[in-house]
Length: 247
Image (cartoon, rainbow, N blue to C red; front, side):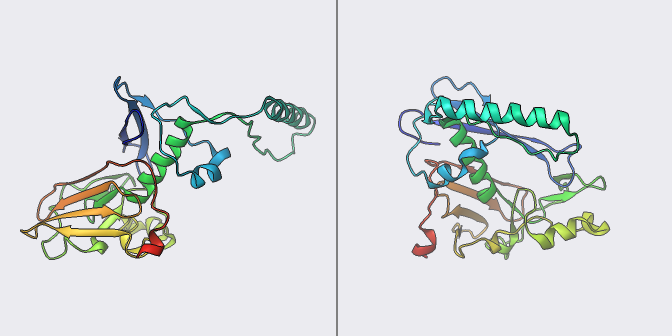
């Protein structure tokens, strides 16, 4: 991601084996000029609203504090957690409810949110490129030969490479014949707002570029009749929140 002072470089690791219905994703980040990749932590759920409302550029400083927690808030949360543990010791029947201890919100926390959001909204693959195995592990389809030239420019032929969110697709995954279907992932054709994607063919009408208008900077491609496809994000990490009013 291109930012104010230094750039973030993001890498994705995938573990297909022993993961039911969808592979495990793990993201890593590096900051120029060191380029040493480190794991991105899970998003800090305490500040989701703050991240959604934030439109400022990234600084390229992972440890930079964006929201500082007052010592009194930390102490209060710690006391609440200790009191909860005592009550649970006295009554084992008490339903367990997690207590979030406030912590400083850093740029790395924000990066974790934004990377997860971009991946969820934009990671695109062509229909048929992946399939379920009999063990219900999603993996590359070795028989995929690419989309036909006549359908390479159709939104309906591209899917989100993420855990299924569409309820109908979730029901399909639970059926015994799901391993024989190629459209088990969510299609980008149902994304809102309508028109969030731009598909453009080259002069030969065999290669298509797929651009996200919701996250400017994401682009994917596919070459008809081949197994060649991919995508990447080159942007500032800012979502186009006004897209619905621009279409």
